[in-house]
Image (cartoon, rainbow, N blue to C red; front, side, top):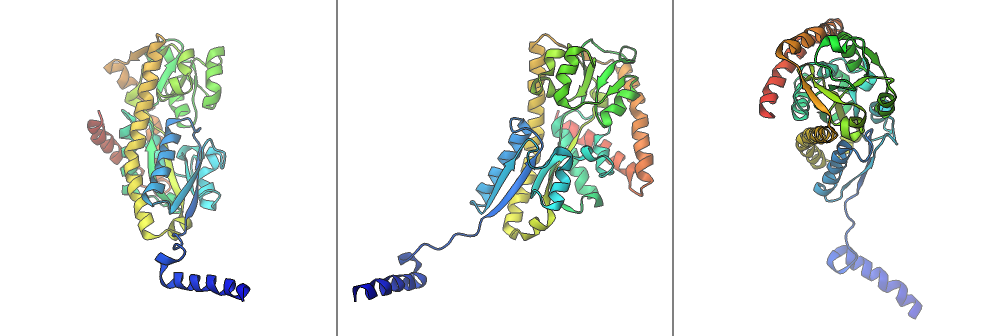
Amino acid sequence: MKKRWFTIIPAAILAAGALFPAFGAPEASAETTQLTYSIFFPASHGQAKAGEDWAREIEKRTNGRVKINVLAGGTLTPADQCFDGVVKGISDIGMSVFAYTRGRFPLMEALDLPLGYPNGRTATRVANEFFKKFNPKELEGVKVLYIHAHGPGLLHTKAPVATLEQLKGMKIRSTGLSAKIVTALGAVPVAMPQGQTYESLQKGVVEGTFAPIETLKGWKQAEVVKSTTDSSGIGYTTAMFVVMNLQKWKTLPADVQKIMEEASGQWIDVHGKAWDDLDEEGRKYTLSLGNKFVSLSEAENGRWKKAVRPIIDDYIKEVSAKGLPAQQALKDLEGLIVQYGKQYK
């Protein structure tokens, strides 16, 4: 009889629990959605940290219904494969650079032109407003959460440069669009990743580099240059995406989608400010080592702008030939840079 009672009583308790949950087992919590997030920046970089903070914020606002596993340093997908990794579902979310697959995002590449971006917050706001207006077909295959972009890419050299004549023939580390800028200015572009730049500058393989100021501290390049030319009049940026697999996005409940969109909208300025903070750290670091900033005269700044204008004209010609509104894109970008440049002085 005892054995029989032991089998009946638990069943009764479970039945009561189903009718009166307060007296039985606790109700099961909502199912947790697990997401992977591939970031090409190393985990220690300020932009990887901003991405990590965004992920934790999503978890907090969804009360743990969404968990995001952040994989930084390109450990899940390399930088140039990050976008395809999201499309194919290798990762659910990805952060990388449009320009790493040049030609694939023709309209978005307008963002990277040497248009004179003054700072990261301006560049980031401009990038998001630009995307919102044009919503290019090249991004239809993903859910764009937000975009961010660094402050002006400037010239950092071992010897001071204040004129095009001083720059002529110098070997300058550059990649992608910045290589075209170097050529237009009369110098010699030398392609290499940031990781090789320090040693190349140290050994004299190159005499300078085009990059945001943040690299002076983040990559310690201030130790092997002596001068930064404030060429922000032709300052270019590099636009970076945060995108999600479209099918995965569609499976999320509407309230979770809303939370992610709201947080993403707020993180636009988080990333923009992070870029500016990193640039300021780079500025302070290079000055602490006794390095100098060289300002271009008004006339010289005009010469540099004129020198890079063919890059912009070529872009308009090439992209217009694809049936895309390149001329309108350029006009809108110039207006947005003025608008947000005043806001984020």
